[in-house]
Image (cartoon, rainbow, N blue to C red; front, top):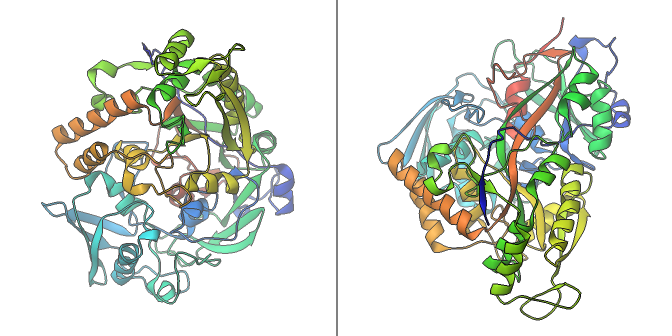
Length: 559
């Protein structure tokens, strides 16, 4: 890998919107004559194909998939963390919290007068029950929270005790954990297997109706925040893919989405300059996920050669709309994490170098046959699949370009498209060669390093993992992650993040493609109040589960 200095600092695209036929089928008001006061907020799920009738907030495929948007509107966490800004968390079910000096005990003050959507009172007992449930059933603990105990002090105060300090994971502890009603969940025999088809939460929107093409949510008339929600409901819809999605977006039949566009100005904003708007913020890192459990991906030299063969500029321009940013080899976001990037990697990205890639391979014991095909150490031609989701036109295009790049070093790669469900299953179970995916992040680098490298979050091949899908494991890295999680000292945290970033750059457990941004498209013809570039009061990305409920409850119909 030869780094180069980056001069571009532009942000990237993420997801898509919905087909017109689907919206017509679900009774969506899309014409300019529609009544704003009665019009539901139409949101694209971000995932092609049918929705599943499962709203269990403790199941990875649900929480990370299309239905996560439903979870974020029906259920609520204790606080809202705005990853678009470096600011304190916003009150939600909780109003304030303190942390003990040893970092082990969180004392949270809760709102008074909150009710569950079935009319039952909400209290600290529900909060304690939720966290204790995660402790008692590790299979439900999606984020690896280090919970030792949770206790209701009284109706509006709860303490959450950890087994070890976990400061950088507060985002997940307090901001991504949805609180569930004890009076319902305590009667469920196996919470990990329930599909929870009629979710009951404290959120601003009640669960309405489900079809494989859409889910409707209706305004919670008894919501505890006065004047919210002002809109009558939300309709979550699906699409067949990005092409149909863009048509529906420009037809005005969707209000809020993110879509991977070749040119957001030309293909969306210019189509209706009065109503079509977008925001963009740095988001995460787009990567290829190699299956480290098998050859040749378990060979560092092979991964280095793959990385050296990639023309990232072409992929950014042709597949990712020209708006992605070249990524830092450490995987740390630029400019957000500049303070954590080691000196030798500051301002660096990744170059294509075919000659060096070939030399890296031959130096490591790989050979070439008479036709220029790369032979593995077993003397067999190197062949593998690059897998993405059907309908993801940006990654499909990227994979076609990657096939051409890999051919330049003698590798026969085949692009593969799977349904979202099949893709998720293969990723979780480790039954893949190379996935075109991304490493999610949070308000700080801890989540991306923890999710991608923590051995406690992976699982043997054939067993579902909630994160670390590549099956990476290194005790030294685990120790660095524990060091980062166990301190609130800035100097110690910087040392840990720099070491993790250096390891990532030198060992390439994931092959970086680009720095992904979040381009969120929306129309303000019927609703006002969306976060704007000048006022990012919340993270506008509608594919992050907590954002939809937090933002939608504050929107107002156009009068």
